[in-house]
Image (cartoon, rainbow, N blue to C red; front, side):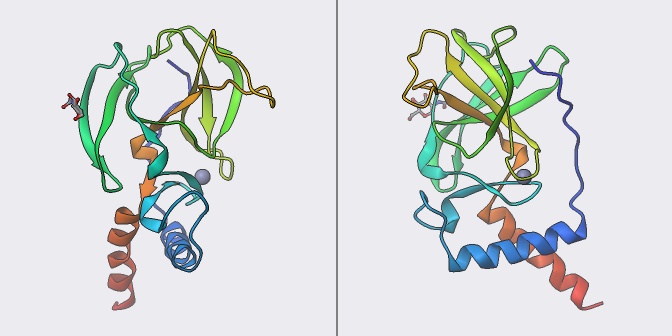
Length: 179
Ligand SMILES: *[C@@H]1O[C@H](CO)[C@@H](O)[C@H](O)[C@H]1NC(C)=O
Ligand SMILES: [Zn+2]
């Protein structure tokens, strides 16, 4: 569906330190739109807040390779869909109706995963890492700011970080300290 390559990336140590300090900041100041830090989905590359659990929606696609329900951020029955692009890359995707992403390039209809919807590449506004795609209904109205009213964002599960994962990271630096 798109040309961007998905690289497996290794967490460098500085990022682990960064995530640790980020987790501390989150404890002090909850981000707007989220009830607490446990509800946040963050960019896996830089820790930027991408969205919150209360923005999760289920939008089934007839083009999913497979799909299942998962519990994400304590929200049960979140629809996870596996999609494949024309290059053979596969992505596990969840859908939200709001996300702090930057949409890149023109809307494209070819190879869309949601019939009737165009897609644009959605990237992290802080680090530029690929987060997913923004889908817009072709026949949808635009609001006052020129945005399509019923747009939704498909986020790549493996490119996100959530609080449980950050907690699991807290174990790593302690091991380093004892050396
Ligand atoms: C997921 O949960 C919803 C809501 O309970 C249900 O309608 C749907 O059939 C479930 N889907 C799968 C794949 O289990
Ligand atoms: Zn980022």
